[in-house]
Length: 302
Image 1 (cartoon, rainbow, N blue to C red):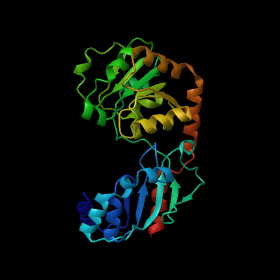
Image 2: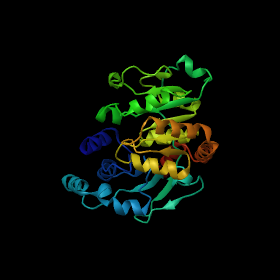
Image 3: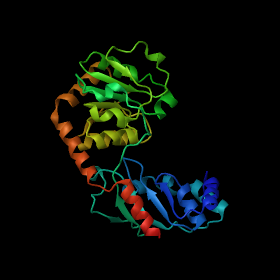
């Protein structure tokens, strides 16, 4: 991937390399191409801006593989010319307010705040999305990685629980095989792949696995969430959700039908969760958009 990125950059004459904080290819490509770099945080649960995170995950940021690639590419120890690093987290969840900047002590590069904006491509709006739900609408999803790696069996307890509640359930499971779930409860609408941005604004709550994008989208729309974290940084996302008061979490290995019903009912009935989610949404609305950041980055390299 690194060599291919460099080759592509040379082919069209790249002036800037934009790359995520958790991937070393972009930084190496910027050095090889001799152009500036813009590092973009792509997690809601952590940021390389946090000194404690960098200390605990030093190998993740610049480990043996990156060192080997530097040698292979003949880059030596030359660091990338990072014009800025982006923190997409909400201010009260570790991010920066619109007027804030933070100087990275590693190289003096500024950290800029940026609003997370959900985007999963376009879609034809189904007719039901345009109608106001008669009952509280609850979204359920495992994202795309969990079904591909471990199937959808963990959804059964959630759907069995919600099937016994007076709610409308929107199941977004992409192209996953749902046959192992058996017959779905009558109040469950399986929509396959449908961008969260299409139906989440009309939801009263969402149950999900704790993926970074799936955690951030409800924050953007002000929707309380129940996180049943799967793996990787999912538990960290769940912890941030609980700490901020925008939702609840439970170990998926021990969760059962009564517990899911209790937790979802709590999200629907306790206004504190919706108020907290609305506060975070308001914070995010004041942060610069990705378009604002792009314009600022272009101005910085001209």
